[in-house]
Length: 281
Ligand code: SF4
Ligand code: SF4
Image (tube, rainbow, N blue to C red; front, side):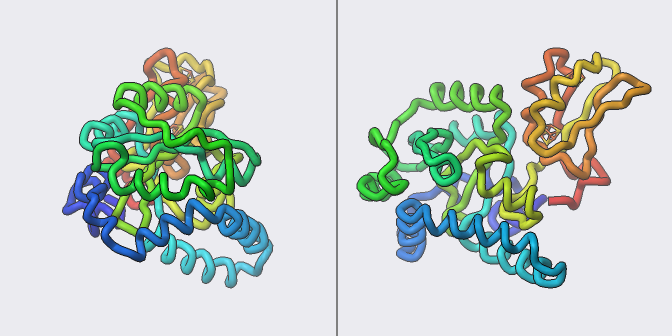
């Protein structure tokens, strides 16, 4: 289990603990301020992206010190974890409100509104988190074309997430000052700041999922469709066996490759059962 399961999950998966979505956590004034600042100041996030680019050119020692410092800070304020679709469904069963909002990363990287993020909350109508976001309407994403918060039923939200999965996007949960969770995003390597930080720059700001993918050689036809959707380069192809296989050291356990496989050849195994990956977060 990851650090957060130990610290915030009482021995279970921390993101499946309803208390970590609780309205009471929003009573914390510093958390509310962090959320306001986060959504109303995309330039700060853009600047962090530029700093990461510069850091990649720094000497190895500087990179290693900075990497540890950034991860430590992010774990306190805004950290994520990859979560497979079925567990997002479990989260949607106990939250009372799901609203779709524009993605701040796509706003920065593409300069346009793209609604790939979902605010989740325990209060009806978005609860106190929804109130906070509505209060930011004027400045939210620096004036992106915001047609209000888009409230969704559980079924609508799950359908959307299924579509995002077909697009090859990886589902992630996000804290706003740990352990409070209020966001579910759908990420890719090209536009998502967290994926770039974690995977491209090796500065982790999210955990891998609690799972690792596995290909059944008997069911695999070697069509390679799964390889085209893996954001992490974790699937490879054996030319001699004519089968795909997973590199457990590279796999983030998102499960997105399963959607691409029409032969049901891919399953997710608990990370703890895969010795090579068990302690790799
Ligand atoms: S998509 Fe499925 S059948 Fe095709 S290579 Fe990948 S695991 Fe094998
Ligand atoms: S191989 Fe692993 S990282 Fe790649 S899509 Fe499948 S589950 Fe995700």
